[in-house]
Length: 276
Image 1 (cartoon, one colour):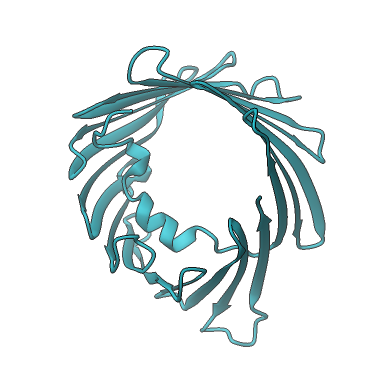
Image 2 (cartoon, one colour):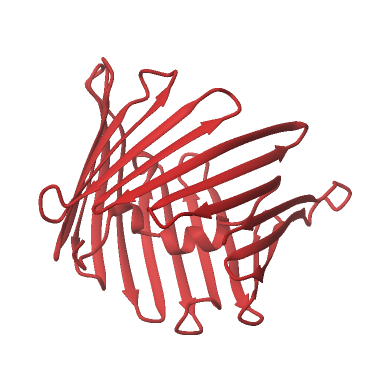
């Protein structure tokens, strides 16, 4: 893919990942294995509340094709086929889930040095078509996306955004929810590896006059340990501790507190991912 402005979904993604990724409230255990033929197998068990679930996912890579298949304990089979460069600078993604025969989806992405374009459509009798586009450079990008319901002939969503990227920082503004909300974020990286960072995000919903301000960040204690925290103006405090036990195998401990209701039981999450 070309080094252009990136997809529309990349706008604000760095701030979102810092504030949401790895903040878990359940127990998760996964084991992955790999073969020299390009096959990867991952087994996952999750306990959330009083419910337990599990799945086995396989991935096969061959040249420019990647096939992902997942079987879960609820007898669902999810399949995703990704093919790169069928036409130069394009990526095609086809997915479906059994036994839900109406879950099929086809997405095509096109990358250019000064813009990207994606279109996705559900493979059923009344498909919803999603379209997004960005223009600009790796430093500054403008983008928009829209969802169109072919049955009703109405737009289900439309969103616009802009991002500015520097080697040590990233800022973005997104107008979403059909113009009912606006989200601005800023990320500053303290090191070249971007392991120690600070983030601030403010969201305003016009219909309810509600503002949410969140600050957070990550700090690399050493090469094996990472700490993340976040706090919003509603008093929700979250923390994550990640430690690489052995190369590529990571233990994650997460917690969430309501500082305005300390009598409530804090929520905790634990995840262990073992990889060869």
